[in-house]
Length: 349
Ligand code: SAH
Image (cartoon, rainbow, N blue to C red; front, side):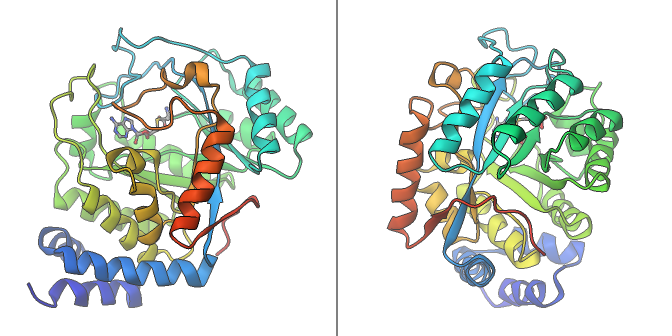
């Protein structure tokens, strides 16, 4: 009870940053009233910057093979229950063509870390997408690559790259990942992506196992310093065939609060209301928008493979056709007084 957290939210709005102890205080002491206060402020800021328009990006999840073994993830290498699939280049292009026809002007290609898709092959694919749809943006989300590979893909015309840092705290990172994965390398990748001129996205799962208020404070400090163009934030949701299967899911309310804090800190940031947010609550994406989000990323993958790209249990929209998702979002946004914007939706300071 009291004005302490509200005063810190006001301070964040003015200074665009808080000290670590202040962040810890915000996360330890906020109540529903503070969250509503932050959401109101965040929503005003996104309305001022973007109006009542929500950008849409079509995601094509083109392979669930992964060489990594992230403890939380349903497509981790060790999950022998996962039915693996790969889309051909033609199939990926066909998803983009279908997406184009129903109004998508950004395609996000996402996968596990699957080395059968070399940088050269993907560069060729990016060029083919750009040739077919010169007015579209291409975003990649393929995990950690080498600098030269990121460069090849950037030179091929890729506009954006999404790589959640997952956590800015090294000890926490090590609890979420096997020993062979490195916190420093993931952070290095993010710096390289920015240097290469990608519109770069970082992000976290809210309530991932072992996350503390200190971890979140470090994530917010990292966002303030790195200034990503996009921030992907969704709740951690357990997957039944991972070692974290009995871990509690992340908090819906804390996820919404974090979206608001990111909007207040970085008013221009592209902030999706994620699929995980729509999974934890049926109105999660609408509430995400009302808390400051301005992007939605529906699925464009072929219906036949959607259930196989299962990062966590009960993922929504895995039975739908792309055109159905498009119509459904239109209605959902309308229900809260927002509209879908079909432009590329690039980052603008
Ligand atoms: N291989 C790519 C894409 C990863 S999947 C990469 O490494 O970047 C995209 C995101 O899904 C991950 O960054 C992670 O934050 C999120 N994710 C994975 N498992 C999850 C789970 N169990 N609950 C919620 N989000 C999860």
